[in-house]
Image (cartoon, rainbow, N blue to C red; front, side):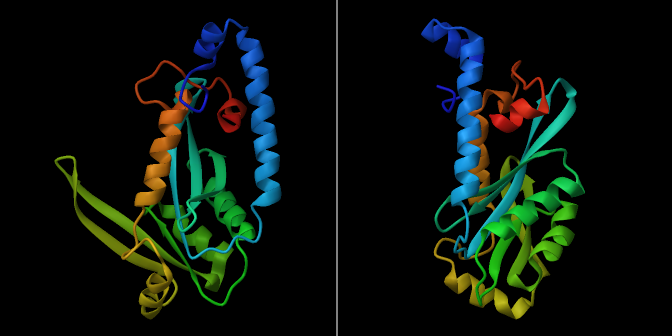
Length: 209
């Protein structure tokens, strides 16, 4: 029920149990999931990664928190997550965590992100010559994407075709898969629903969820 987007209060009402019980169960589940993910997501063979962030709130509407996510496109593998403010530090943590989970190889990994200003520097610093970073910016008009502009910020331009030839899903650099994951996360987590009264009271609660 939690994954389907139900709040802890509604889960407690439907099952006739205390909200504190639901809180304990979800806390245990989140800790086990975190340990399992940290233990198993190692030496991942990656060809294409996409990274993005989605906004949430804690304590009040003025206290904004962001969920940074990295996805390995070929396996649809949710690789890394960082919860925090939309800052250079959060971007650095995501770049470092995703890098340490991916195995070394001779070929560059294609990483596509939006033009958020910290991705360029932090990915270059964490990944170095092992990645080809492309910023994908969209021009939206009337609720539709009218134009997509891709800019290579790390790596030689001539290697883009070579990297794309190894990608099974993308003919051009894009962020469509990570945006689809973000939509799933938002729909599955009541804290991140748009126009909702539900919000995480603390940063830790959002991170656990």
